[in-house]
Length: 359
Image 1 (cartoon, rainbow, N blue to C red):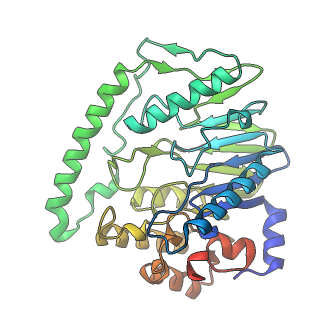
Image 2: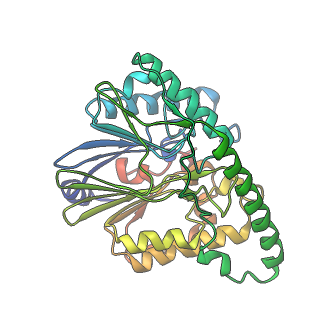
């Protein structure tokens, strides 16, 4: 657990609040960050826990509504909204009122590095948003894709020797590259949904860009795979918030991170606050295999070794099943031995274990 003194020290360094996370009882990874220049909310979305989560439907609905209220409260004075991708635990699609009259809403680019289902969600969402503010969504038919590259081509993770798993891995990578080429073909055929820059609404696609607001700098990564290399789930981005010597790194759905290169990004940035999503241990044996879980655990230990952080929050995806702590035990034990502060969101915010551990 974390002392209130430590919480206060972290708060005055770079003010952040863990608004809603999986450990509170509903799927989410929502953070509010306040600097001297701006107030921002990252991934204001929340979704009900899956059927196998060991709680009653009444409790799940109650936790969902409590999470939604917390998110709405956090948005009241926000200058900026950041949405890293179009999964419902990361954005609210059915209430356009929350996106207007902001300095900016930084949204995942719906035109490239996106799968078909998220493209459709984004299109419906942006059209509803434009209609609400009496705007017409603007499309461009000209080709605007000269800088598209294969984001898996130069990953050093593809050169790692996995022994007996190498053959199977090569097959999966080759299928993934074929899938990527198909996505590329789709992107070139789609009409390009333009950003919206007007008095009522500012929708910006920020991947691989830097934005400054006074002394606050937002550094957005290029599109990153959602989990493993060539994940069919699509792409996300991460963001580094810098104010003076304080740096907060936020990842949404890197699933660990599983990919070694993505751990390298965190190590390069040297943030003093890390908000990191974890592996989907509740899907172990289905969408997560033992090898990729091991990769993830080694990557987090490497971050612990190589980043002098004040606190790392490791939560989203993890506390969705009772054995998550057992299945990731080596990381929690490693952080303890290294005297590094590694916590779930509920431990940080309320000095309480994740709800799953109380059921």
